[in-house]
Picture 1 (cartoon, rainbow, N blue to C red):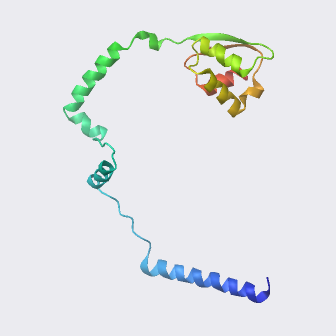
Picture 2: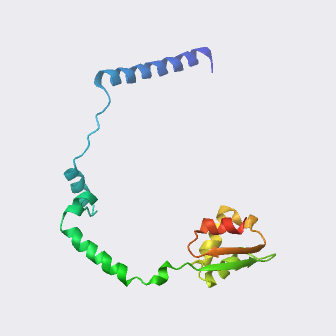
Picture 3: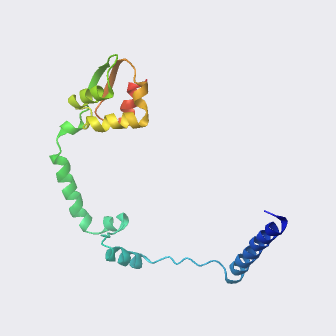
Length: 152
């Protein structure tokens, strides 16, 4: 690039900056229009979404009383079995694969999906750091918590 080309390029940048600055300072930035709640609901309903009242408004309406009654009925139907935590002591031996560990955890009802847990452990890089030993795990642990426990 020679001197004249560089000067022409620089002049073009300065000119375009001046045009944008002149537009910005004379006309100003576009004002954002904030739709009203009714306009927003109308747009959402046209697109197929279902809109409802905010929580504060539903507390004051009679509909909420019916909803709480249904919630109480559902809570009574839930067995206490869901509140109990299943714990299991898994023994990781030398040369165990992540699939074998996952299948043991699935068999003992610690996880629901052995292949999903195995994929998570492999993708996140935990499989390289799994330790040999006995580990206590529970069914309310996330995949991340389980993997961290097995790699400590």
